[in-house]
Image (spheres, rainbow, N blue to C red):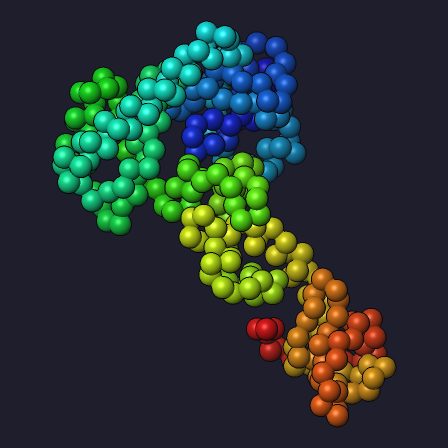
Length: 276
């Protein structure tokens, strides 16, 4: 029985699902699948090869039932249109109950098994009365899901500073941890307004080349090391990692850039980290 990696839901979850029949599905095919949440619309990404599975961590399982038919597409459009009204109804009840939460999105599952309410809140919220009101209004199961600022951007953001669609809403299935150390190593500006994404957190793209920078930096003498180059004795002040160059101070107190290949001898290595 063939298996496929599929993407489903507004949070763009990835699952490994078996097909009911030996009918091949190509990349990009819209299908109806049964997930742990119920009947959902999904998109086939690729076959579940060992290489593809190695990139996933404990993916949920499910079953691809069929390719989406014209009738399914009409139903999906109707559901998406209803979600706008359901969002307004949910917002009205939150305001009436004066709940300390910010409504972000409302997702109705394709099969009607449940409605998922995504919200932001600083503290724990007692939403039992809200769930009762929504369940009576929509006549289905209500699932409340508290999310963070990165997830909010994943749901609502469109384009980043680079001019392209935000990564969290396109190819990223998980938001990787990003630290200021990554920005410093790549000599990115430390202005928060320049290195923060639509979520207000450090941009995910700061992580993309970080491992390459780390690997290339290992080939360079640490900052503070004393060297012998073709220019004589000098001390390393900073790294130009991609260019594989060193900013050094010579014995006559001049600061110059020298290629790493010009280093003849490392007299004294230092453990001082490059904080430039």
